[in-house]
Image 1 (tube, rainbow, N blue to C red):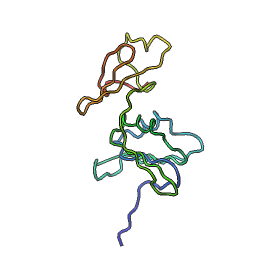
Image 2 (tube, helix red, strand yellow):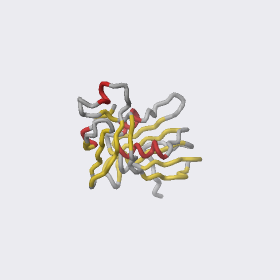
Image 3 (tube, rainbow, N blue to C red):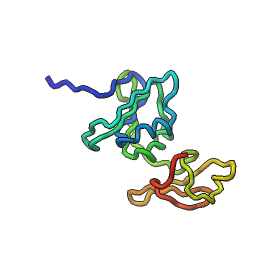
Length: 152
C-alpha cells in the first residue's frame, strides 16, 4: 500500500498558503501579520515541490483571507495558491492576481519623495511589463521594479 505522508499537519478550518517560493514564508508571516494569539499557525520551510523544486507553506487555523488580502500575496509569491479549508477539505482554491494599487506595504526608494517626510501612507500603482512587476509611486510618480522596492 502506498500511503501519502504530509510534512505539515492538516487543519480543520482556515487557510493554507501553498507554493510560496522557498525562503519567502517568513516575509509573508511578517507582512500579513499572521501570528495572532489564539490562531494556530503551522509553517513548513524548504519543503520538496514537484513543480518548483522547493517551497514554503503556511497553514493558519481559524483565519480566512479575503480576496484583496490574498491578491496582495502576489507581490511576494506570484505563483502561490490560497486554499480555504473547512472540515479538513479544500472548499475553495484561489489563484492570485496582482492588485491595481498597494498601500502601506512598500517604501519608495526615492529619498526626495513626499512619502518620506510627510504624514502620508505609501501608495503604489502596480503594473506588469512582460514577466516583471513594476511599482509606480503615487507621490513622486517614479517607477521601480518590484525587486528594488523594500518593505515598509
